[in-house]
Image (cartoon, rainbow, N blue to C red; front, side, top):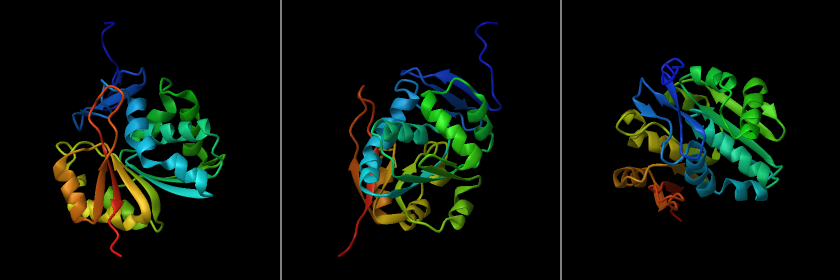
Length: 231
């Protein structure tokens, strides 16, 4: 009996390489993070650092971040942890899209997520929208409906759906064109994907791509996309 792992809805927890907890989504048949890397490490090195969001917010009074999708909240938590570490006090506005509303209760009720400070901040934001210099606006809906509600442009977009194999509707040209329209001219889209086919489709939507640095253990890099501005 000691080997049984409890299910939380359609999600099964597992420990990743850096000690942080992630979950396997039984409906999508895919984990939210790579077990061999570490959930927190993956968010930090594939989203937060490549986006340059710390540097952006140190130079600007306010930055807008679009988080696609909320998932287990690690991308937001890793962002908050880095901003707090660097004592950045300018305002970060976060808009996060997520169609699986059970994840909100999971984050509020599951006690083993870490880093603790980042998740304490996130739970406060889920309860009250504003905490310290952060604001979090949750949109609980499908991506294609959710973008209709959004009337701001973003400095940074974290693009983090399930893989193309499991979530193909999110890896298509129409989505990338939506991202282009949501992004400020000097903004960037960051994703864990390094597929050539994905980069080519982003190029068709008007982006140029740059490969991120590999993670510390040599796991595959991600990609940062910028608008290809025609002067």
